[in-house]
Image 1 (cartoon, rainbow, N blue to C red):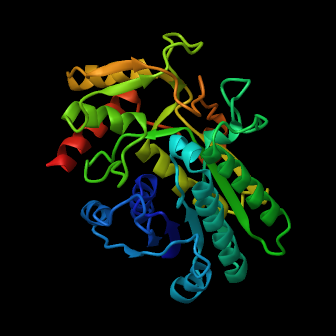
Image 2 (cartoon, helix red, strand yellow):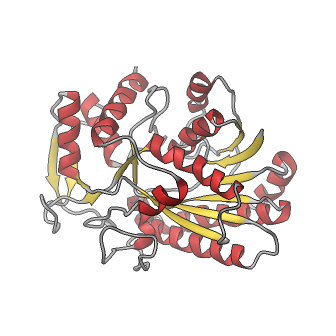
Length: 340
């Protein structure tokens, strides 16, 4: 069995990817400081897979993490790096925390890869690297515009760091950067899902928390954008579809078909959904009415972003199988079970 280190393994996308990796015969070691996650997720992973995953609770941004990884984890066959702070709004308020955490942790991971000569690396990137894109849908060749938040800028800088490192490495090391659009939903078993330790910022968990009564109401931020109903357009992709892409990316690196030192792939459903349409999809599939209000725009938000996913379909063999209604159904079932 090939051994894969997953950083941020207790997080939302990390935990779902661990499930997919195990189901594809990989051995997984997790590193997660529980800064914005909980160790409870590993119980759900064990119920789904029958495998107990070891997690090492260390802060990858701390200087001592490099030696710890070399001594306690050692050589692995690949690294998938999720560990990062990810709130656009929070990053505007706390930019230095985002630079320190997101760039510091990546720096230590790349040094670990270099010193241990680890052949395969997959980076958890984001559509925020494109900034306020001037063309839609966004392709992997879309030129980066200035990031609209410190979070987005850390992802841009991270990709530059990775390119600089891999283009000048002396080994046959390969990397893939996966640019997520808007991950949402929960595992179809409803045993794991999105459950951040800090207050949810993403639309779908805000919707489910409102529906179940954790929030009295929710706010639609901005109704005057140049979109079909005035609310922001986003490309929502089911988290299980997203997780599968990481396993496929590993397969591509292992097959040596990745001829470039670093390659990039958009992961989205390839179509945009407005915030109001997402709310309507939740109400339809779950037969519930949401209490929401219309509010002003939020700092750092873009009017519209959605993906051209044809490259991932052609070269990774990836194709999303879940739609927005599946996302809303799974998210709601997860919310009900996790709130009990």
